[in-house]
Length: 67
Image (cartoon, rainbow, N blue to C red):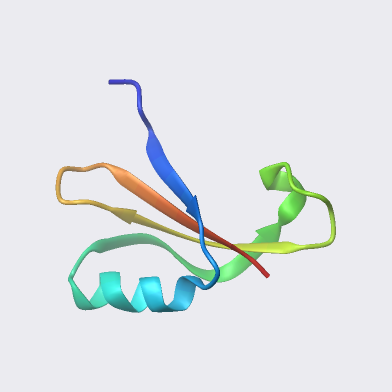
């Protein structure tokens, strides 16, 4: 109740994306485009790649990688 999603920092989103796609998990954001790190409250100058997936019960899980 009231929980929007879980988020995790990871070293590399690519293997996670491959695993969730192979498992047929719904991918909402595929990490192909990075965002400015300031948007995440991080120091400026870095890029953050994210993937967001939806679990079978409708919950969201986000994986972020500093590039």
